[in-house]
Image (cartoon, rainbow, N blue to C red; front, top):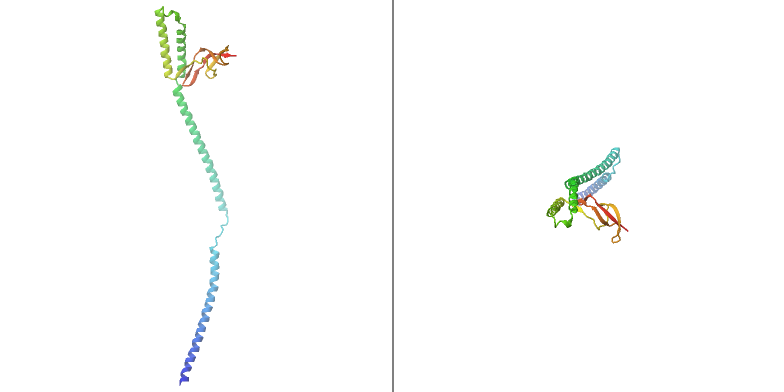
Length: 218
C-alpha cells in the first residue's frame, strides 16, 4: 500500500520539474527576443539624439548677405548723423559769435567818426599857448572848456570800450601801429616807437585805428 501511494507522488514531482524547466526556457527565449528588439530602438534613439549640422542653403546665404548689407548701411548712416551734428554745432557756435560781435562792435563805424572829433579837440587844446593863459582870462576859460569837453568825450569812449593807443617808447607792433618814418635814436633799441603823430584807438581789444608813429633805427 505504501508503494502504491508513493508512485503518484513521484510522478507529480517529475511533472513539476518538467513544468519548471519549460517555464524557464520560455522566459529565456522571451528575454532574448526583448534584447534583440531593444538594440535597434536604442541605436535609432542614439542616432536621433546626435545634433545635426544644418546644411547651408541659398536662403541662409541670402539672409547673411542682407545682414552684412544692413550693418554697412547702419554704419554709414551713423557716420552721416555724427557729421551732421558736428556741422550743426559749429554753425551754432559761429552764429553765436557773430551775434556777440555784432552787439559789441556794432558801434565801430560810429566810433570811427567820433575819433575825428576827439582829434580836433586835441589839436585845439595843443594849439593854445600855455604861457598866455595866466594873463588872458578868456583864453584860459576857452582852454579849460576844450580840455573838459575832450575829457568827457574820452570818458564816454571808455564807457563803451573805446580806448586810445599811445605807444610811445613801446616796441613797434604792425597790428596796432603804422610807421610813417624812421628816426635815428641811439638811446633806445631798434624798432621802438619814438614819436606819435596820431593816437590810435581800440574797441574791446580790437584795433579800429592804428597809431601813426615814427620808429627808431640803429
